[in-house]
Length: 224
Image 1 (spheres, one colour):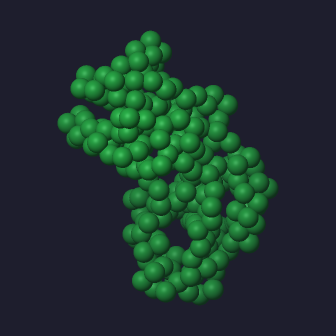
Image 2 (image 1 turned 120 degrees about the vertical axis):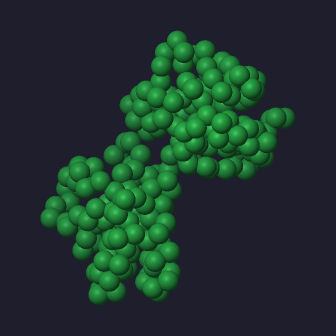
Image 3 (image 1 turned 90 degrees about the vertical axis):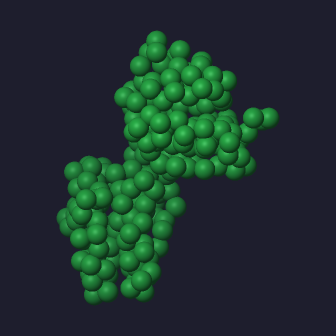
């Protein structure tokens, strides 16, 4: 069995009891960063588990090894640094390999920055779209933002704090009244939600540059 396990997005208390039980019983743990997962396991009091690195640069190469181990009877837990494996993190290719090789797998429910930000933003939740990280190039980034304005409901992106001002400048320059939310450091000590128009949020973060991990939300529901 291969188990994909969501891990806390900030607050370590958000790990589920079931997730801890699966980690404790696993024969090995495949993780995005062995150091990050090592800290989580130490916090949980789980010792002596073999850790296997599984990240975007080695995922394809590591898949045969993990599939072979599962076929041989091992229980393998798969985690990313935070949140749900496979959502902007390694895991999608592993699921595809399990389906192709007829290897049983399970996905545990748990912490998600996407759903936490969506509900906390106050923007429409009847329909939503998640597109991972915004493009680096400004032209493609503006197109992605404008597509979100045309979509029904709310569109979510991950964004770097170093690029957020540039993103708000692009959006405010073309659509100053666009309704947005910047969700920062979710579940952590300094969690904040910043809600307003693109122009308002641009002025706010020009006065105080953003820090931390960010989910950027954009409402396409003009009548809401």
